[in-house]
Image 1 (cartoon, one colour):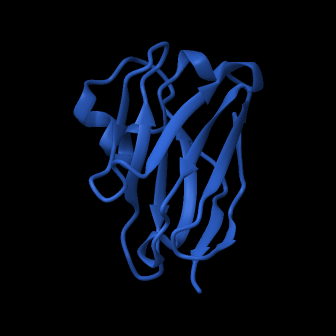
Image 2 (image 1 turned 120 degrees about the vertical axis):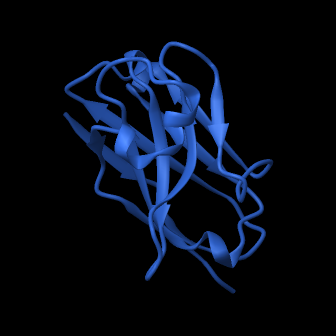
Length: 127
């Protein structure tokens, strides 16, 4: 299984970016998927996730109302639409996939739930 994240870059505060994650080696619609981020000197932080086969989504408190996660089953992947970006959103963003099973909701917030990880894409929010 491989995950390829893309779409990061430099954006001014208040701007928008859309991250993409494409999976190979599995059918992404059959798996829970999520986004995490890690800023320098900080722990990896949950950003958003979507349950397998459903539209149920989860968001970290710091991104609620600004970020939207969505699936693209035709592309075997997902997106993270990020609006109203802030300097504190600056981080490397990672996409991840849950290997098997249908975890309880709280498990989607934990990095240890995810079996496969992409290489990360840098997002920098700065004027």
